[in-house]
Length: 74
Image 1 (tube, rainbow, N blue to C red):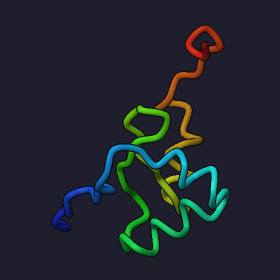
Image 2: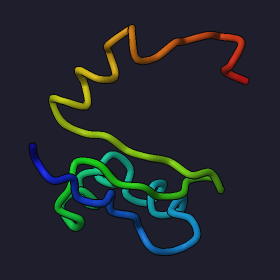
Image 3: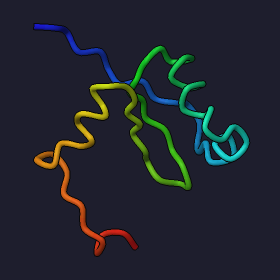
């Protein structure tokens, strides 16, 4: 079995300003710097876990893993 590495975290309080400044390059820039397709950060004061890559897309679109509800989108 493969050994799991701890999920990288961006140090600092919030990265909203960086996201606004960098736009779409925010995620690729951080993924490259952290050398990981998965990392934790904070945006708009909320904890966010980002996932990128083919396996992340497969997970995201697996309807058995996520339940979508317009009620939850407030």
